Length: 470
Image 1 (cartoon, rainbow, N blue to C red):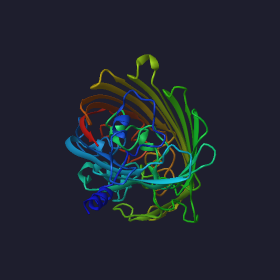
Image 2 (cartoon, rainbow, N blue to C red):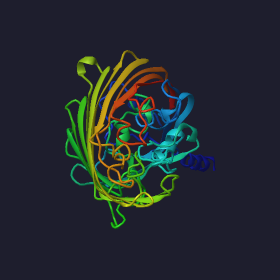
Image 3 (cartoon, one colour):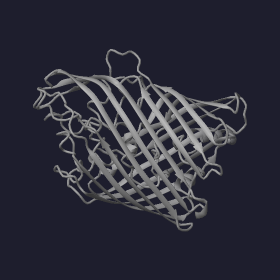
Image 4 (cartoon, rainbow, N blue to C red):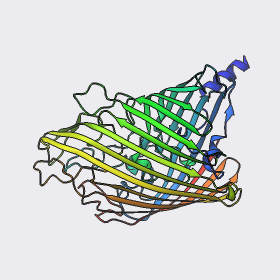
């Protein structure tokens, strides 16, 4: 009887190995990713593992007085103005992983996140600012403001069935909801080099619902192919009201160096219809979108088109540094094309959509000893117009409220993070971050620049974080 109760409780509290992106780096200078990934407790059911962490912190933004002063360059709960204590996340996971044997087998994994980060992951296009003087969501507002933060939010990050077919070296499949294959940083803050999320992280899809297959050709080369509904959506994702079934196609190729101390990952996504992009909102989210406003009286935004996104990242742990140094890079290139339509009191008419964005980042971490490390990150993000980060510009020269293409925006950020592993499973981090940009407010009346008030920054951030992993 007691054994059965223990087994039931083990399933109820279920969650296993941290949900790090499939393309997460393996080469490591004793980084946090490995520390949290290797902590787990096996439940009463053999092979089913429970793991997770509690992540809390304090942030202080020195620049600006409003919630939106740095929102476009920082993700979610990183935008809080002045001093703010935060429960970033309670992460719990349950997993029965596939074994290394090349035989027919199945497993599963489920990941749940509770906290302020969950609130932002659920909807980064949360209504906040005005659209042409109205009260609707604006593109590029980056999610709920600090006063709308909710640590009680529940986010289902992953839930999928894993299957291995004994074909060749073993052909694996995931069916269900799973994290994005793109991006160097992942949704779990403790698994990244830095506490805050980088500029490029905000431009990557978070998760998909569909099917993803993976195959390891040998010790040095593995690949992935998948078909999903689209980015950041549990349902069919298309912004074209005349298209019945929009999907996204995924592909990845990863090269691992002999010795396993370096790898290079190339990731690709093509969406057959305009994708659901929660990092923007008005012109890049689920259709139709209805807005009311004091100056416009309301209207509807729809669009059709497609998305192409390429992401490349790599890392290297030099052998001469004895696993103390980790170097990494990341790049992204994306393009969204199509047509949009504004109806009602927005002025009416169609407008072309053609936005290209690009960015690069460099990362480094040095583990001085068993308890102290220092990590840095520098990133650039740019675009040919502000369509990726907000409306594509003022409508003054086109009549009505139809967006137009204007000069692109530019973002930069630099972050320095000190880590302290003072006790087993306990991580303390302190961080400083600087953001600045150019051609920001010129691109969209709704776009808020670092420092607020139309300037390009700089804006300063300091924060602290404490993480306990289990």
